[in-house]
Image (cartoon, rainbow, N blue to C red; front, side, top):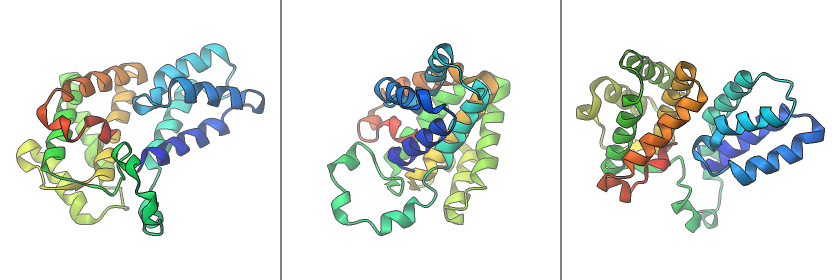
Length: 218
């Protein structure tokens, strides 16, 4: 899924849960302050939102709905891309890589480092829960071909030694998001965002990240 797909899904769910009187104001302050943050700054945004406004839905429920929406967005993006003209593949793709982009070995090393840094911040007893959530969730992603799913499952089982030679960016984003959402369930969104930001900062320091930034995968 592209960043645009996820952003649109986020805004759709957010708008549906806001009263008309505050909808435009809230969406504007999210756009200005949080839209460029990892995972759209959802935990900090919701803290500010609920401190300033009366929202009919519970914060935890809205968090889950926003997370699910951004994870499932773009399932039909591949079909839509096939109808797009080449003019849409502008220089902006360097900033917002397409979900169908194939990630090579260099990028997979970056993904593995990001995954390892993120799960290392979880309690030892919870690391298997995060991997299990990824393992179970990725098997349900029918928008990807079975061989890609199988390769990723073997990678989850075997770690770095079972790394495939290539993988679709959208699949890797989905895989990481599954682990992120499980972490939110275990520790809450604030702690999960802290884990994510720390993992991104550490992964940015590896040489391969100069070619494939870790932020591609979230």
